[in-house]
Structures are given as structure tokens and as C-alpha cells.
Image 1 (cartoon, one colour):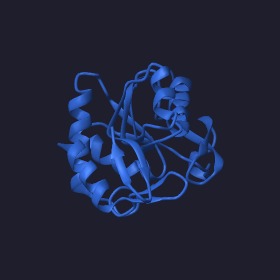
Image 2 (spheres, one colour; image 1 turned 120 degrees about the horizontal axis):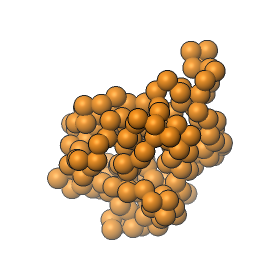
Image 3 (spheres, helix red, strand yellow; image 1 turned 90 degrees about the vertical axis):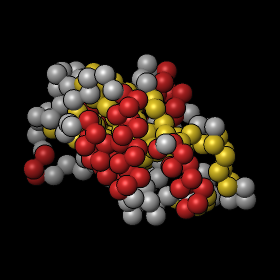
Length: 192
């Protein structure tokens, strides 16, 4: 159900731009369609039910809305990796680096050691999986904390790019609700 809803929404409102960019800002990562998010959260709950998820981990900023709504289905907290160090999160942190496809730069991402540890069984949530940099960074943070990763819930996977294969080759179960085989400004989006 959530898969069909998301694919329909991408077809209707998604805009393909030059450089392998899919703009879904009208419903996924700028203006947020919370009812769609609720359906996606229920689907990830169905897919990862019984996996012992006790915390959701995401990265700022676009993953936060999805993670929060999904967490309602899992009845667990959300932790998000921050891209900037602030006075309230300086000090005892797990740290790694992530190259952003969208912004074309490398970020230091951090999570306070207070919020991740060996007792955690994590579900990673993000809006896109393309080259796998953000998810790789989240996996690094989980490893540093000694946490287990139940899997990753992705809204949209660009299946022709290497991220999905990279993350799956690390032994991580990836459940993408929309997998795009190809896209172009002329022909639009083709799903797997």
C-alpha cells in the first residue's frame, strides 16, 4: 500500500532535473505529507516487526520527519546525527564524516554518546539512497556505539546508483519503499 502510494506521488508530483536529481520537495523533504509518512511508517513496522527495534537513527535534515513519524509505529525514540557541533552537543560524541550528494561537500556528523549504545537495536531511516554515503555514516556511528542495526528503511532508492549494493554488501537489510530503475527529464521515472 505505502509502496503504491509513494510511487503514485512520485509520478504525479516528482520533478526530474539534470544531474540525477529527483525533486520531491512538495511532499517528502520540504513540505511534508504526514499522512503519506504514516503509511510509510506502518509499512516499515510491518517489514521490521519482530526485529527488536528500540531506536531509530537518521541524519539531519530530511530524514528527521520520516523518522519521527515511523517511530510512532515502533513506539521508540529517534536519534538524529547532527551535521554541526553546537554548545549543547559538544564533548562526548561519536563522530564520522559523510559526503553529501545534494550539497557537494563533506560533513562531520555527530551523535552524543548519551543516546547510542550497545543496548540499542537500530532502524536507520532516510529519504534517499543513492551513493550510500549518509547510510554508511550512520552505520559507522552505530558501530562506534556498539549498537546493532536491524536494517534500513529508505523512502526512495536510486537503484542504478551504487548505494544500495554498497549498503547491502555490508550485510544490512535495506527496505526501500520506491526503487527507481531510471529517470530522465524527458521520460520521467521508471520503477524497478
